[in-house]
Length: 413
Image (cartoon, rainbow, N blue to C red):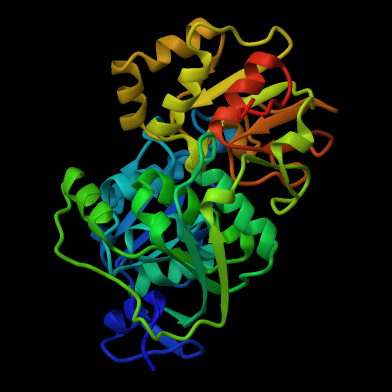
């Protein structure tokens, strides 16, 4: 039997053929933890009496509550910094950006195993890496031994053909997929994306899609390594000749086919990511806050989309618009190309690179009864810091339109 992308990567790493269902031990190429998860991993490492196996393969990022909103967080940041300095570990401090964006910009390569103490580590599967989130204890063990164990996942084949219509983005595509297979439809599976649509998707599009594989329960979300991948890696200083495709006769436990030409803009309504509706069904829903950013949609193309709507317009007087680039690199690009000026002139607040309101710690927590339309990946009850608020999810164009209009608006009109 031939192999899927997940099976190929893990076979390459272990040096022997592995198939779905096998329990394996594999070496790890990159380990990441952030300020929300690193303290637990560091303490666990100490309790186990382990030392860092290879500091060059560990990345620590301060992004979830930065700049620090309170004393207790500041003390945790101090702990992480001192651990990184003592062990010669690469540290991305306050203002560098969201961990997942930093890793795709600088560190992840194809045919590697990437572990992160964060569920959205599956983002890096867009670069042909087996990337998955784990708990802080598993991360501590990986830091100490350079290895991890896991069950090779079965694969859910997602085949998408055709070009996305106007006003339809990768966010609409992945939300539609999640609606069709539900929030648990790919539990502990590798979501493998195939089809002619891929040649029309940029790496930023692919990052958005892979990022949200976990919202369907996925263990990872994988794209082939093609010309788009190779060009992106070369442009970021990581030249590679690796190409990665699944075998034509690989076995897939589940399959879904989509005609991209028939997709439409959608919005996920509270309080589940798979509660997805055409934007036309939710048009007119008033919002109090709009948030454009995060590891899902805080990239340059997302900011450019928002700026096209905001240019020459003003944020509605009853709406707060918060924009947060997902990395310092993106922030600088937005500055140089005039996007930040456009946002501020329109009346938006621009946060420093990081997670911001998405995680519900600071920089945009909602009041009781308020409604936020966000480009983030989750709309669970209380996700943005207040269980008495509501969160809708959309692409950046719908979000920017809502900031101007004051309510959810159908962009196709």
